[in-house]
Length: 307
Image (cartoon, rainbow, N blue to C red; front, side, top):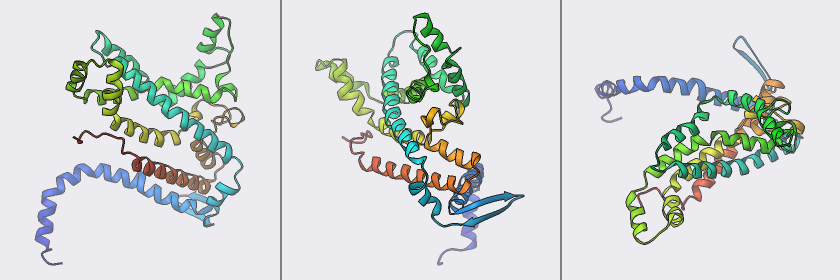
């Protein structure tokens, strides 16, 4: 190409190699632990009888049969999809609203409010596996702290995770443990709202409710949108039941059998890696479509540049 020579290449490298060195660990990590596994998973999803020994992979090509099996043959998928949809539709708004109003409560200048912010955030520092095991013990029918408390007032024992009718609702209650993480994000959004908006509203006689509806919520819609996107992605991949639910994370009568648990079970319990990879790719497609839909309907989001 005209004007493209070795001296320009050398100059470009000399000017940018420092940045490349700093980015190399991330680039290598993405290549080795993300891009290559993604390609392998796509290949595996089109094959069956996958066997790996000493770095050698043998498999049988079956085309799209794994994908056909998801929709036409797998009898578990109906229950898995229903559980995942219910969990997503309830968990996302419940946690978003709860963390939002928690942030409103601690977004004050009261003395000692910083300590409450720390207390609410502390549970988020506990690893997910440890948290799941902790809640399993607290919800235990015999010696769990919640049933001990219910016993003091003559109620219980409540079965929580041990009963198919209460297992999913118990997960919703358990997840409230981590709303402190969302609280921090909401607080950061509130801090970016100019004080002059509230001062102008107060001059017009606006009360706290009016300011919330007309200033706080509209001015934090960008964070609301961000949290919706990340919550959808995270919730559809939820496999936390593996740490506390019976029947290898499926719960009583498959009441906690989520889509990500299904992927784990097919891959590592049934040794059906090809089918598990096809399930993962379907999940990726669904998440992608939902994300595109959310972005296409995001005209209600205020990013701050509008006048």
